[in-house]
Image (tube, rainbow, N blue to C red; front, side):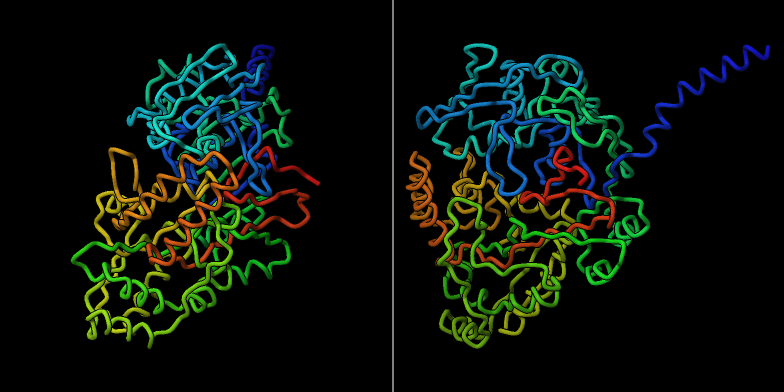
Length: 507
C-alpha cells in the first residue's frame, strides 16, 4: 500500500513539475494593451501585431533600430514590373505543429486574408489580383494596380499553416496561435497573461529566454506597481503623469525613443461647410498652441511636427514648418472668411487610444473657444469612436497614424485621397477631405519605379497636403519604457513599438 502511494505521489509530481517550471518565467513584461485575438489577421493594430510578431513570421521583417527591411520567410524579393512581385522562400522552416513551410502556405494566407470573416487586412489582400507558385519555394504576386510599397508591408502580413488552418474552427483559430515564429503559444488567460515558450528549432536560432510571460495591464497605476514591486522585468507604456515619479525610483531605469506615430487633427473640406474655406482651416491651425500641449499635457514627452510622415518614411519633407501660434491672426482669418462671430464646431476623438488623447482634445477645445468658435467636445472609447469614423460621422477629430510600410504613398492613398471604395482609396479619410489635384498626384506616384524619383513625388504630395491644411499635425509621441535596474536586460525600443521577444537578451 505504501509503495502504491509513493508511486502515485511520484506520478503527480511528474505531472505537476512542468507547470511549476513554467510558473516562474525567465522574462516578465507588463504592457499597456491586451491582444484582441490570436488570429494574426484578425485585428490590424500595433498592439495586436506586436503579440503576433512573436508567434508568426512575415515574408520579410524589420530591423529593430532603424526599421530597415530584411529577409524572413523570404530570402530574396524583387519588383518585376509595375504589377508583379517575386519572392524566393526560405527552405527548411517548420510551423510549431511540425508541418513544413512552403509556397502553398503563403498562397493560402493571402487568399484567406480576403475573407472578412477572418481578416481586417482586406486593403492589402484585395490589392492582389493573382498568386502563382511555380515551385514550392517561389511565389509571384500580381496586383490589381501599381503598389510600390507592396514589399514594405510584408513584415506584418503573417503567414499561417495551410494544412491545419483550413479545418480549424474559428474559436480555436482566434485563441491559439500556430506559426513559424521564435516563440510558441502556451496559454492565454484573457485579461491576465499570455505565456510563451521559445521555439528551439527557430530558423534564426533559439531565442535567449526560454519562458516568457506578458501581462497586459491597462490601468496606469497598476502597471507602474508591477514594475515597482519587481513583478515585471520590463514595462512598456510608461504613464506620462507618473514619469517624474518613475524616473526617481532608484530600482528603475527609464528608456525612451521618439515614436513614429503622429498625432494630428483631421479636418474635412466639404462644400457648404466652413471647413471648405482654406482660411478657416488655417485659422483653426493657428489657434492651437502645440508648444503648450507638449509642455503641460505631454510633460515634454513629445516632439511638435508640421507633417504626418516621420523622418524614416519615404516622403518626409524636412523643409516643412508649422504655422505660428497666433490667435489674433486666426480671428482675422475667420472674419475675412465671413465668420466674425465664429460658428459651431464639434471636436471628436478617442479617450483611451493615444497618450493623453482626451486631454489634448480638451486643450484644442479651449484654444478654439478663445477665437470665438462655439465648441462641442465629443470624446468616447475607441471601440465606439472608430466605428463612427468608418461611417464618416466627424469632420474634425483627433487621430494618430504611423505607416507600417514606411512609405507616404500608402498613407496618402488611405488618408488623403478622395473616398472611393471601388478603387480602395480613402479608406481612413474619415473627414472626407477631397482635392482632385492631390488625387492625381497620388495615383501618378504609384507608377514610379525609381525610388529616388518616387521619394520626390511623395514629398510634393506631403507638401501640398500641409499647404492646403488637409490635416493639422500636432506632434510625434514618445515611446517610454521602464527596466529593472540590475536585470542585465539588453532591450532596444523599436520604431514600431512592437515588443519582439527574440530581440531581447541579457548583457
